[in-house]
Image 1 (tube, rainbow, N blue to C red):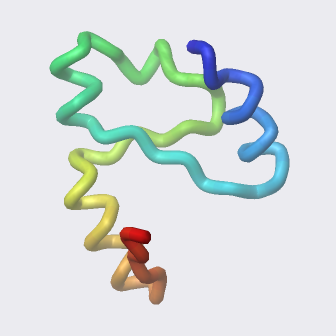
Image 2: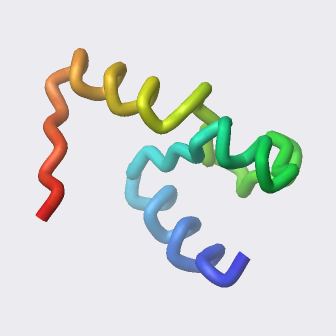
Length: 61
């Protein structure tokens, strides 16, 4: 993963990182292949809905 260093820095600074489970399945990425600390959501839409319930907002810009 060419973004591994960045992801590890984000995780080290208490950032939550999620991967879309549907995309992961399509690309044959299993949870065992994820960087320690990265979480797999059922889908990006599910993660977005759950984060909105926690008070997070989405800014597409």
